[in-house]
Length: 88
Image (cartoon, rainbow, N blue to C red; front, side):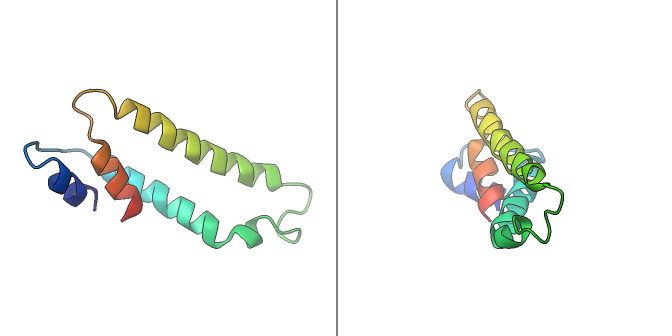
């Protein structure tokens, strides 16, 4: 998905790398968290106060997305591949 989005918006450049696939895995993790939000933060799953561990996973994923998006502003890094990998 990321390569297709990159080819649509940047047809004059060739992009290579695994960052689109890695962002695809991050997008799958975020999708899984949002689909199972009530289960992850319910009292039956979070005995002994483990809710902060689930919150830390969400924070780390969002930090990773933000950091890689900032790194994507440097030359020769394709943010369209990142975005397409995460969304598709």
